[in-house]
Length: 109
Image (cartoon, rainbow, N blue to C red; front, side, top):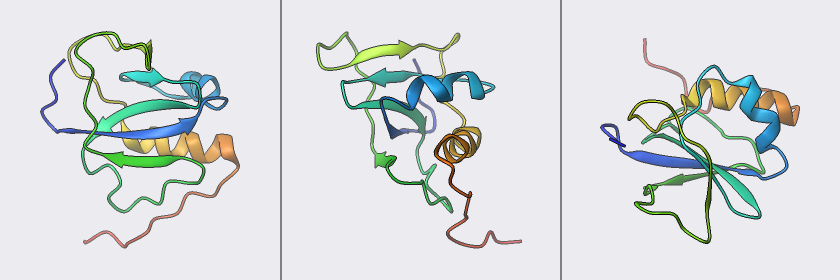
């Protein structure tokens, strides 16, 4: 996998992960542990987004080079880019959680 934009991750409670997959037009790498599904997104995907709780946004994600007993690879995209597009993920997450999408800062014109 190549990560030209750097990597961050969005952790979503494990019970919501299977509900998000079919709602997304493209899915990148998704890892799971017993508590969370970790969606790999480009670095700075938290810009102007307030990710709804109980999701957690983490900067500086590192893709494991080898399988790990702590993480299971749930989804691997075709190709070499590991990212899930953040805006569709954000909107799908808001919908599944019943949250209204909000923008934390105005976008410059």
